[in-house]
Image (cartoon, rainbow, N blue to C red; front, side, top):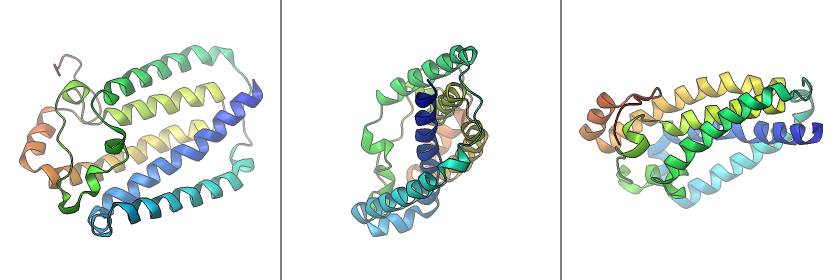
Length: 197
């Protein structure tokens, strides 16, 4: 079990910071990436992703030095968080293709790609992906029981709050008044459970 926990902790360590970094590089500089084009943008972002992954891999020893052992008492809460994260992800996947999840509409020339989603889970909350990611990483932290993965959870929450701010700015620019109306009706991160999609 210790080996499984270690490899899952390492996977979280390699993936989570890079996902946040990816969106912090895309959203604030979206006009630059649009001018560059999708191919070169994805090539540069992939190189960045691989480079950061390499640096995190090299630092894995000190970063994963503090672990608290296997604790079956944490598995129940971890399973509940993981189930919640997957339930939200399944709702999202009904509405979003992989290209949308990877940011393809943001990179469309002229900045008018994609469509404004206002139904399904998006009728309840504007950023359900962020909720699912936080729940999933919290589940991962409880299961792996490594200090570095616990530390990723608050860092992830703060990072996603910043990413959401940049994304909201980009969506308002891309969709204009319809997005402003949507933003006024639908909460950012804490869903209105009674809303109909």
